Amino acid sequence: MTPSDAPHSRWSDLDRPPLNVPALRRGLLRPGGLWTALDVVETTGSTNSDLARRAAEGLAEGAVLIAEEQTAGRGRLDRTWTAPARSGLFFSVLLKPGGVPVGRWGWLPLLAGVATATGLARAAGVDTALKWPNDLLVTVESEERKAGGILAERAGDGVVVGIGLNVSLRAGELPAPTAGSLALAGAVSTDRETLLRGVLRSLEHWYGQWRAADGDAAASGLREAYAAGCATLGRTVRAQLPGGRTLIGEAVAVDGDGRLILSTDDGLQEPVSAGDIVHLRGVGGGLT
Image (tube, rainbow, N blue to C red; front, side):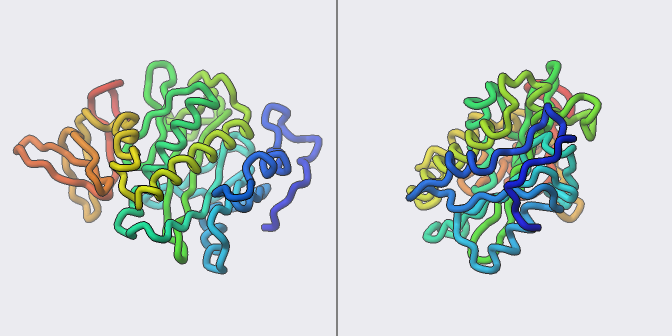
């Protein structure tokens, strides 16, 4: 789909105005900065898939692709992500951390989580917690709800990082009882341009620190920041692992490789590098 700066029709939802592309470019694209291109499409299947295809054609680092609506957005484990047009932020960025050991690239989705939470705290006035490895949680009526997610995928010589965030979804529009949005969490601002600028500037900051430290999550401060904002740590969780194995234990740490360390009843500490995590009990209570 061809990027377009054209305004929406007069039938657009006035509570959900289209993004002002020229203003976003003026605010985010600057000489020497990380962001090199910014395009907005009206609707697409998946911004991650679209940007990955362009990355294979030699697209420069720092490209940002935003969709006003995603019809086939993807989360981890091939889950779908859908929401009404202009009700959230659905975007992907292309990062090429050349010089950083590939073994450390697994920190990129966690880095994106820290950056998103930090940016939203400033721009929306909402505390956003991180559920390992890639969910963004907000509190709605004293319950933890999922308001967003992150998906990182290798693409050519880089990584495409996709971020999906529910911004103005109303209670009747939520896809599941466990879902939430910034509006329902009491955000002081649901202006998507303000939120997008805040998240992208925060992402540029954290990515710059991480690269400057050669991808060392401890030296860059990323590991400490992730642990401080991670709602999974200190809780009993169930990890549904690849191959059908299930592991239950207390989440006690995130190690230097970004793996979640579980302390099991038999006294072992087992690292989890991939899997579906369910919070069984702990801070906030309930299942998430």
